[in-house]
Image (cartoon, rainbow, N blue to C red; front, top):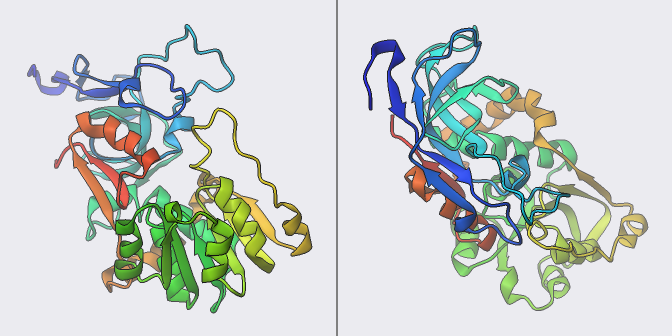
Length: 351
């Protein structure tokens, strides 16, 4: 580290995409660079902010956000740009030339997978007002996954007391909150997950009525009929594929499906088809996909609902935190094999 007052230059470790991803992401598709440096001051003439990244969020959608698969292109000889990955994170402002942010502010939103970032796009950047909860929560329950859960459940699915709710990938960043919101509303809630540990977590800590390991169910249709003999009223879909197809057979008339993610399809060369779409017509089922960035205007309303529940212990949140930016690639890759238990977070710095 070189010292020089306002022009102090420091090393800036970064996670960079080495090769475009084919199939499932691998750690070797990324590398950690220790060659970068950065001045801890916003460049003259910029209206940006300079932040120190504290927590980074691992999310499957980063494949798309960073164009990690170079969709629609021939990747035989092409190389990705030598820039850090980007994603959601929590950071502390070190210097600001923007009127809405000042030194010392804590923020969450889109930032770089690096120790320090110069942020000049403020479309998805929010000042943290409530610090009586773990800051890491702003990568999860109080950040993008939280508002995703709230939007999909309340805005898309229009739930009411007594609804029968099914959630796939239920122990993940979004699913665990959807289930708890549904329970607080008085719904019957079942979740699927990929291990005994996660099933136990859903039933014991997160208070789902039932949960099952989809990997141990040779017939998903039969499994759903076991837990929903009268059918599913609301399905919060995080996985797509075979699970969605089985759910369509088990939806109640006028049921609602929020399509949040399709992690089972992201790394397939040829996506699986869905064969039971006729049931949307026969049962008059509403199905809607959504992108959370269209709903960030609901963030204050969401906080008003969730913060008191967290304070009272009525909503809990499970995190899987690894320490050190160099562990970021492995943490990200692990999402696609279900390695994480709860919201996957990378701790970059404790301030």
